[in-house]
Image (cartoon, rainbow, N blue to C red; front, side, top):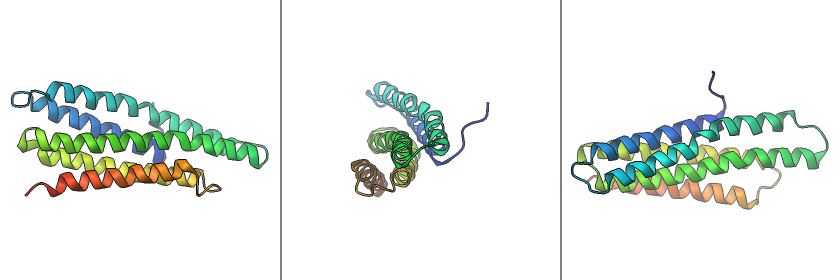
Length: 167
């Protein structure tokens, strides 16, 4: 089965992969970090939450492209297409936050991997926010666009803060 293409599915798959990397890092830190197994489970939960968004994003965007009718019907179809990327941005921001926590507490030899996962997740949050904005282009002041942008900005700040602590 071919993976769905497009920016939304890509951002979902990469966010899910970053979450699994974090789970691996946490598990590898279990001998020195008492919280490791719980944190690994949290990362796996983020993976499981994000993975289905790849197919969902592709499906609703294809439906928007095929939508017929007047402005109202088209607007509803594209508003629906903005929902999965918003959920991807939310998940990516959560992955970035978890990455910063793991970078601080996990095995120091895996710190750079955790920071990398956070930076990648932040990039995915920005990509997803862009998709939300594009799908809601007729409503530039839409709360969903603002929320997606805030999530992306927070993910970037979190990832950069984790990166800055390497000294």
